[in-house]
Length: 215
Image 1 (tube, rainbow, N blue to C red):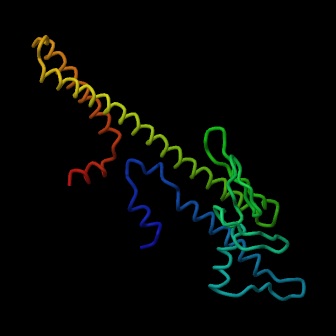
Image 2 (cartoon, rainbow, N blue to C red; image 1 turned 60 degrees about the vertical axis):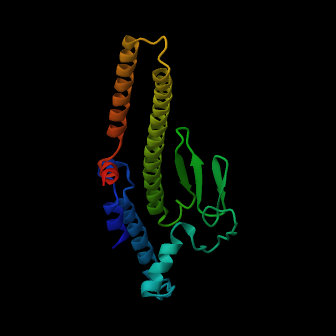
Image 3 (spheres, one colour; image 1 turned 135 degrees about the vertical axis):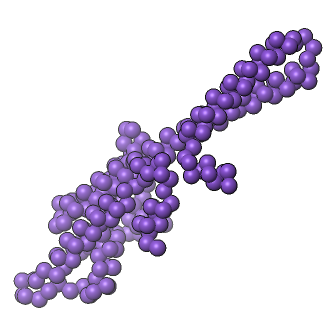
């Protein structure tokens, strides 16, 4: 099965809008590859064609040449064992690179890529790709952080309820000085709190996760 179909089949339906738009990003990459193929097949001044291999080998080379993964004439890059990708190193809020991109942290805790080769021939295609890639990555990252915050809040509520249940059990096991009316009020309050938090947790849990828990 192709990655695109596998990716779609694994999506949680309720969260589908939060996933990366794989198909559109793939379309942008294909446009970059088509441009590079046209450029490499264009005749030179002497009438000969620029040849760097043919067929499948040429296409694979173009895939790796995208974003400077293969060195271009006049550009020399040094490898680094701490690089996130070849030629890219994270240092604080900005990455330093001997390659074609810089990645910066934005004020809203997102990421922004600066493509340093936009002025070169065909660079506008890759510039569009990196801008869309930033949008998609930040969308997924924002959604993930929101879900983490929800889980932390739910955990805090559950911890408070557990403390209350433990305190209630102590009172039940040691009922001296605690009347039946007080017990009834406490039981009603605890039941209401548990019901409310259970409903909130259920609402934030996707249907796929619910069915897997039940099976």
